[in-house]
Amino acid sequence: MVGELPDVSNYDLVLVGGPVWSGEVSTPVRSFLQQITPSKTKLAPFYTDTGSADSYEKDFKHLVGTSQVVKGLGLTGSDWDTAEKAVVDWSENF
Image (tube, rainbow, N blue to C red; front, side, top):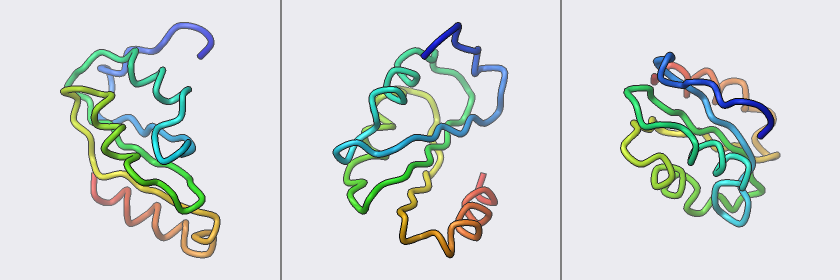
């Protein structure tokens, strides 16, 4: 990450997206999550994978400690035709 990290506590919800690496949160996203201060801000993970998301959301929740995490959205290349609907449906649950 380059530059100063923004204060996420100024937001109600922060969408955090990135790829799945070996079934877990990628190193750049991991670094971001470890730098944020727990707050009332909800975090929503979204991620892309090749069908092996494994423990991504469990890993994500572990990294953010006491911050609230909403159900994430994982998509693969085979979800291309239904991705827009999946994102809309997901976003309606915040």
